Image 1 (cartoon, one colour):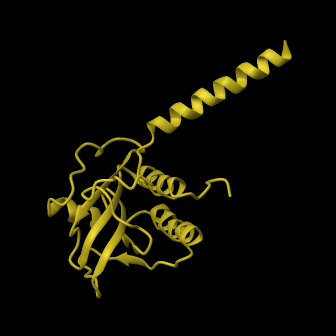
Image 2 (image 1 turned 90 degrees about the horizontal axis):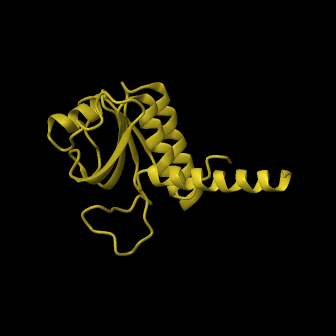
Length: 169
């Protein structure tokens, strides 16, 4: 009886964990056939986030930088930007992190670089978008935008996890 309950619990756990994985947005792909329009290398990409975003988003951005350094062996700069900041030296790519109400994301929305209508007002939701010329001085960017603080943080940690960093270490 105990054995059959243990087996049933293990099967249920496997089903739940697989279903949870299906609900996550796939950010990272090792598939060499990925479309050039939806892919960019994040190996050397600096992480950009807004000064006026939530403190939790700042912490998640710093954590992502540390995680990606552990994975790739390469340190990356963190750029904490103000609303009208300019990038001093041109960047091939960047990871742009922010909540929908941060000045950085609002600038991308105002310039029609991204559309956040599908996540605005939702709880703990995020989406990722690869865009050309998201900011002056940035050729291509992976934008991780959250509907709120926790949504943004979930998006950042999903990128780290899918890149190979365990959330339990």
